[in-house]
Length: 125
Picture 1 (cartoon, rainbow, N blue to C red):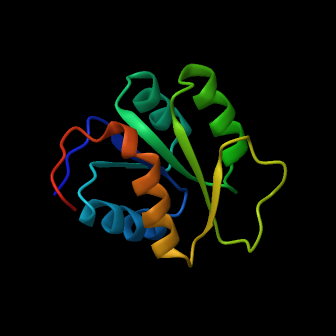
Picture 2: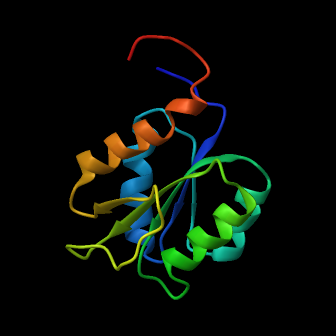
Picture 3: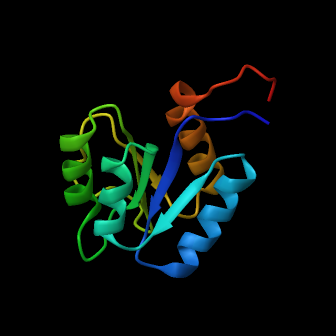
């Protein structure tokens, strides 16, 4: 299984969704940091441990606000909006990927792509 130098940060205010998507991403070999707190999310981002931010688009602090804060600190951070809505709340930041929560395969593929630059070994998948 490939190894990565950074973690995936999963931010969602719904604990059941965090558990479901966190489990899916962990099975791909990622270290997944899960939180419903923007403060905890920003601490992980500022600490440099995160390569990809997966955030619910609609929370008490919106995914848009979190993405703006995160990219202000780390321009190299990949961002994926995850939402139960059928379409993104516009406008989404440039380079941000939108995935519906019911598209779990799409989420896995988007995170694999997002984390490609943080892969530290060349073992076959």
